[in-house]
Image (cartoon, rainbow, N blue to C red; front, top):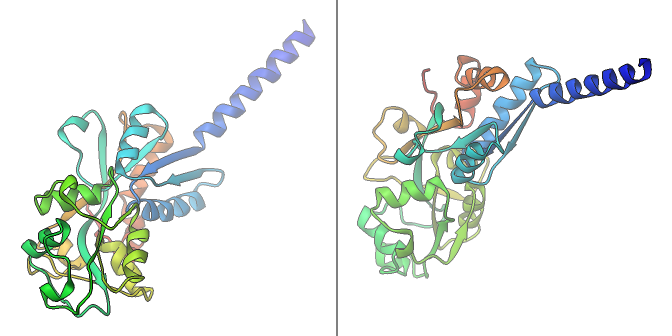
Length: 269
């Protein structure tokens, strides 16, 4: 009996340790816009909670929704408002952001009308000289399906993704910025926060105004920029334990410096 009791106790102890390890880790998946912000918030949270690990993986907002529903992720990252068919999930805004057009900084075009953007993306305008630029074939950069940036862009410009004639299809913001920075004839669209960050780091891109409004974090904050969105954490049920603690931390003033540093807009809880 003593031996059996010992084996049972060891097994029980091992199970408890495993459960403890699981509770000390949070997995976040989803939006590539939210991921760098979540990772920085995660680092600060880890520093205040020794032994806790925050694992952040991107892959697009649709992945965040799917993984959260399936229980693969503790928290999903979604860079838009939840749709009507997603109201089974709980959303927690941690910041807000805008989406804008980017060009190579050497492109002389300084603005495009909404109609010109639509005509470029649908293949009706194919050369920069048609919109006041230099002679050069326009390289249209589009986002992959499942990216909320794509959804926001097509919704604002009243486009269907099937109407877009793209030469390059990219995934995350960083890839989009690198693609445009590497091609003077390219046009793309990305998160304003990500673009401002890249420009500050020396990237060869520039942000275009939309609807006559300059693409800046300040104009997202004062609600004058026409393409803006909330950056959300989402959960399958009302968060408990470590997940609740982390979400509360991500919505607190303790991380406002991180939000501002990444050129996103702080939201009041």
